[in-house]
Image 1 (cartoon, rainbow, N blue to C red):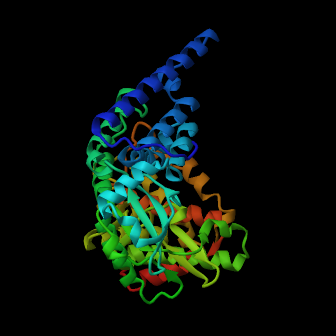
Image 2: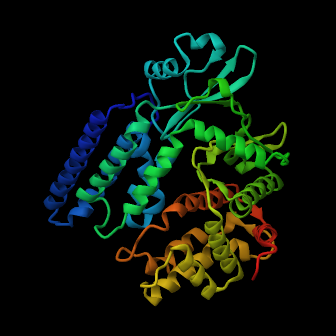
Image 3: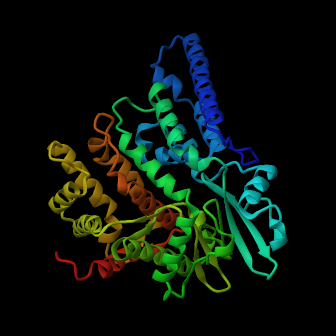
Length: 440
C-alpha cells in the first residue's frame, strides 16, 4: 500500500458507495480465484477463495482511502482477530497501523479555513502542507508561527466524526456477508467499543485535555517531554501543539546496548505507572508515538487521542490479575480473570485453564529474575502455539472485555517495541515497585 494524496470521502453516501465497491471487488477476486482453482481440478471452500492475498491488498487499500472508523476497524481486526484470518490478511491489515493516504491540498485548505478563517496563513511564518504523518483520524503538519514557535498541527479528515457509526456498521455488515470472519465470531462488543473510542478520538478538544493531564502527571519526569497545547489554534477538528523534536524511537535499534536498554526501561516503567498508578493509559501502540532527542537524551510522547481512563474498581481487577500472573499463581489468575470478565461461570475447565496459561505466559518478563532479553525472546511464538489455541480456537473465540481491548494493544505494542530495540529490561523489578504494598 503506497501512501499518496487521496481525497477523503466526506459524505455517508459516498463512503457507503466505496464500501459497496469494495464488496464487489472482493467478490470479483473470489470468483477469479475460484475459476483458476477449478481449472486445476480443485474445489476449495468459499471462505478460502475469498481470503486471498489480492483481496487482502484490496481491503487494506480501500480502508486506507476511507480513513476514519472504517480504517480503525481494520486496525482493530489486525490486532484482535489475527488468529482467525490468514497471515496475508493479517499482514495487510497491520499496514493500516502504519500508513494512510493523506488529503490533497485543496481539501486540507478547506478544513483549515473552516476552523481558522480565510486569513489563517497570516499567523504563520511557514506551514508545511506535506504531512509528517497520516493516520486513521487525521494527519499532522509542521508549522512555524510568526513569533517563531515551532508547532505540530493535527488536522482531522472531513466527515470522520459524523461517519463513525455508519462506517462501523457498514464494515461489520461487510465482514458478516462475505464472510471475512467465521460466523461464530462474536464481534458486537468489539464494534460497539470501537464506536465509543472513535467518537472520543475524533474530539481534539478532549485530546487536548489529555495532553494537559499527562503534562501534570509527568511534570517531575525530566527524561520525558510532552507537547504543550496551543489553545488559540485548537478546535474540535484541529489540534495545535508545540513540536516535539527527535528521531523515531525504533530508529535506535542500532544504537549502543545501554541506550536501548535505558529507553525501553523508561517506556515499560511509564506503561506500568499509567496502568497501576495513574489509571490513565495512552493506548495507541504505534511506534511513531515515541521520539528520542539525542541532544537532550529525552523521550518524547505523542498522540493522546486514544487515552483511556479506568475507574478504580476496574483498576483493582486488572492489578489483581497482573499480581497473580506475576506470582505464577494459576488458580489466582483464573479467579481474577473471572472477575475481570475474561471468563464467565459457564466456561468449561479446559478454557479456564487455557486462559490462565495465556496470562502466565504474557507475564513471563515480569517473573524473570534480572533483565529480560526481549531481543532473544520467542514469547510471541509460544503465545501463538500454546494453549491459546485451545481456549480461543474458532469454536470458542470471543473478544476480551471491551474496555480492555485497547489496553491489550498497548501492552503488545510495548513488548514489540522492546523486541525491536533488542532491549534488556528488569521488568520484574519495575513491576515489584508498582505492586509494592498490595495484599498478596
